[in-house]
Image 1 (cartoon, rainbow, N blue to C red):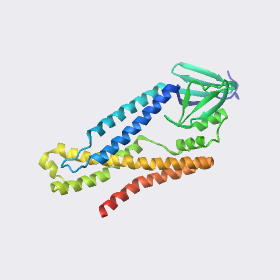
Image 2: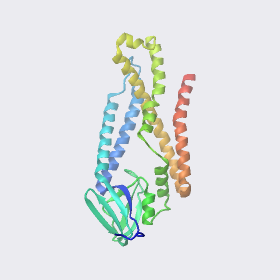
Image 3: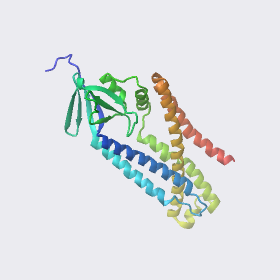
Image 4: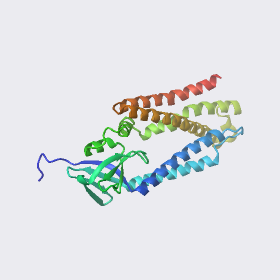
Length: 284
């Protein structure tokens, strides 16, 4: 039986990537993002072209399906790479799908945060032999791992990723509100406006052509505003990450405060800014 005061190993859930698989996963993530943005741009540019019955371009649908397939592949890779990394007094232990790697503390020179956080934040172990350990570790928040290992805690990238992991709490219902429910607001307004102008009443298209065309028309407006909001959110996200990274680089200790400010500002600009733009368009 171990002594009562024996050191306790700290364990972290990570994803352990060989270099090739990390590159593949990063590429899939980039392609998925590009597909979503291209599909959104095509929908915004090509849906309303003066036709009596507007519809999103077919290519946008194929790009959306491609993005969905790429998302599935990234989730599969995450499942395949799931692992546990433990920090013990005399060794680091990585357990991955039946494999167990024990690295003596004395054999590890340093742990470095990924300079390019793809497919997510993570760190690599530099061995005293001069080579990196064969598995790179993706972990949402590298700071607790580095603190347990006693290395590179004050680096700006560490502060940036720690603030991002602890301040941003992404949940599926948050994304649903942002990109499913919120687009309904302008979609319903513009759809009903179109119904009254084009067909003479809120249900005139349904009465004249049936339920299918009526629902398809509404779906077209919802798809259009969803795509528009994806692009709108992407602009603010890029700016937010630039501000947050700059703040973390200039003052790592202020990274959480900067991140909190950035996320609040982004939410206000996304919801309030878009509503203001729609109102301004109506008042023109």
